[in-house]
Length: 196
Image (cartoon, rainbow, N blue to C red; front, side, top):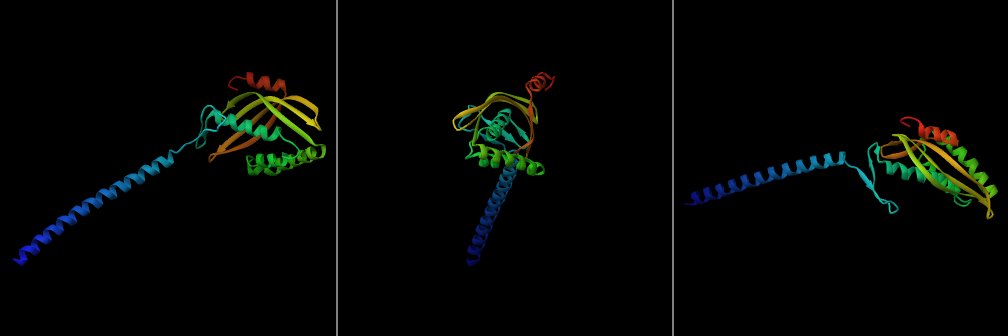
C-alpha cells in the first residue's frame, strides 16, 4: 500500500516535471523571440525629431536624412556664423566647430579666431535673415539671405550673401565639409544648372 502511494507521488512529480519543462521551453522560446525582435528593431531604429518651431517632422536614419533636417541644420549653422554680438561670438563659433570634421578643424578654428578678434576689437554685431534655401543633391545645398552689421547702434553694412554648403552625415552626426561664398551670378548659375 505504501508502494502504491509512492508510485502515485512519483507519477505526480513526473507530471509536474514535464509541465515545468514545457513551461520553461515556452519561456525560453519567448525570450529568444523577444531578443530577436529587439535586435531587429534596434537595427531599423530611426530618430524622429520634432523641434517646437517646426510644423513637420525631421527624420534621420543612419546616413539618410530628410530635406527638412538639412534645412534646419544649415539654417542653424548659418545663424551660428552670421548672427552674433561681441559677447557671444566666441561661444557661437565654438558650437559651430563641433560640426567641422577633425581634418579641417585647425584651419577653420584659426580663421574663426581671427574673426572673433576683429569682432571684439571693433565691437561688431551681425544678424542674418534667410531668404532662400535649395538642396542641390544628397550632400550639397545653398542658402541666400541678408546680413546687417552694426556697431554702437550704427548700421555699418547691409549685404546679400549666398552660401553653398557641402555636408555629410556620418553615424548620425551632421558635418560641414566645405563652405563656399558665392557671387550673385554664381548663385544664379548654380540654381539653373541641370541636375543642380
